[in-house]
Image (tube, rainbow, N blue to C red; front, side, top):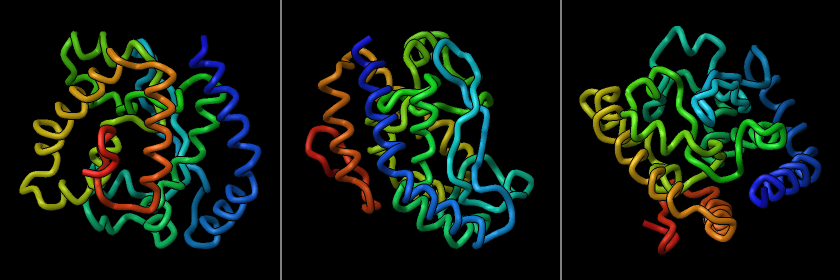
Length: 208
């Protein structure tokens, strides 16, 4: 209950204070490339319930037809505004609405698309999907340079499924076992400190 009240307060306050920035970004996206301002995609939430996540659109509208669901390095599908939005993580800000409506939390394992969740073991599903997915978590901080890692792989899809996803699930499981309001506060502060940096971060020493 404390976590949910904290999420409601912070998400509501964030949406209110950031509304001018959100408006400016929306106008920029609309002027930069044809298509909607928002990107919606089905993800798997708490207890395996699907929901639609919201982000500022950072790719061409026909991106799904032109490549995989994972983003690799300097993906040509990314728009001009999208490159900055992704680097700064501002494309994630609309997820404050997902937090406010109860589909997500400020801190929690990042939600995956159904095709990757189908590869989870029963133990991973039971543990990682027992909490609301979050905007940030230790795994997303540690793998901030994920697209660059995938770009250097011979088979990016296989690299994600066999190497990165299992590592993320291990970190997510550790978070779920130890989660508290205080660990969430610390992760939020580390996330704010990581904005604008491309290097990966760890919770223990802020930078890896």
